[in-house]
Image (cartoon, rainbow, N blue to C red; front, side, top):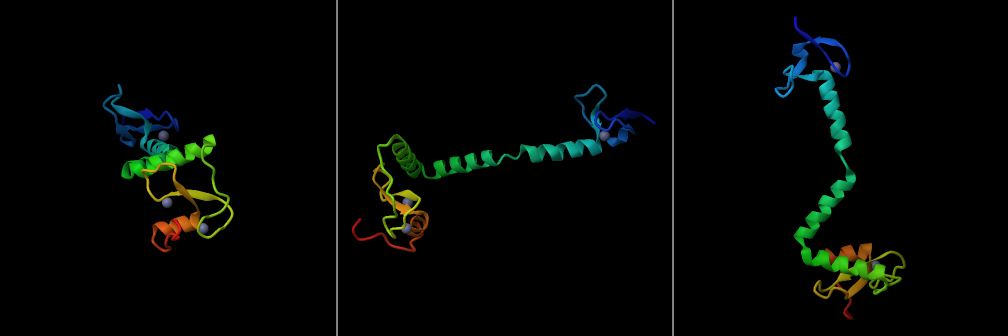
Length: 134
Ligand SMILES: [Zn+2]
Ligand SMILES: [Zn+2]
Ligand SMILES: [Zn+2]
């Protein structure tokens, strides 16, 4: 019986234990099926990158709503550069803490209302209405 030594587990195994690989001189993969599968599984796990996942989601967002993306980017850049000052509290409920810039009109890049995350979400979902003073 023809055998081949697996480069990973170094066992001398019958060639039926190897996948074929037309590109190799032997015509077979140099690791046995078992090792090859283990290797592939390992690769898949390592290949998963949560950061990359976020980027694609961001890119999707950007593509779906370029106006919004542009406006949000303008705001965060302006805040970073000190051209725009974040409010200390939510303009709807008055909660002090982390606030997010909300655009009434995405074409007015730096005209934002500062809202806490929950008011912001509720406003977009139509759960609460914007104050009449806006
Ligand atoms: Zn092996
Ligand atoms: Zn709020
Ligand atoms: Zn908003």
